[in-house]
Image (cartoon, rainbow, N blue to C red; front, side):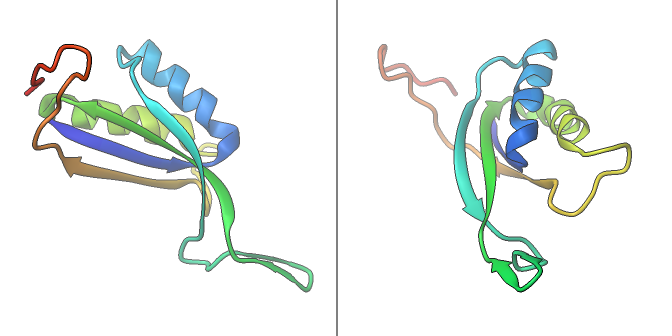
Amino acid sequence: MKMIKAVVRPEKSAEVLEALRVAGFPAATKFSILGRGKQQGLKIGTTHYDEIPKDMIMIVVSDSSVEKVTKVITDSAKTGKTGTYGDGKVFVLPVERCITISSGKDEL
C-alpha cells in the first residue's frame, strides 16, 4: 500500500476530492497547511508573503492504484490546461501497516 500526500491550492481541494470520489476513491483526509515552494513565497509590491495557504489531501491506496490516483489528483488540481507555479506537489510514500481502530484489525 502507498500513502499519497497532495499539496494543492485551497480553491482546488474540493475539485480534487470530488474527482477522487468519482474515480472510486472516496476515503481521504484534508487539512489546511502553510508553506512555500521553489519561489520562496510570494511578493506583491513591497510585501513578501513567506508562507502561502495550501491544502493537503492524504489518501492510502493499493500499489496498483497509485498511477490512477496520482493522475486524478494532478489533472484536477492543475490550474488551466497547462498548470502554473503554485499548483502543488504529489508525494507517494510506502505504508508499512494500517490498523482499523474500531476493530483492531490489520488492513495489510
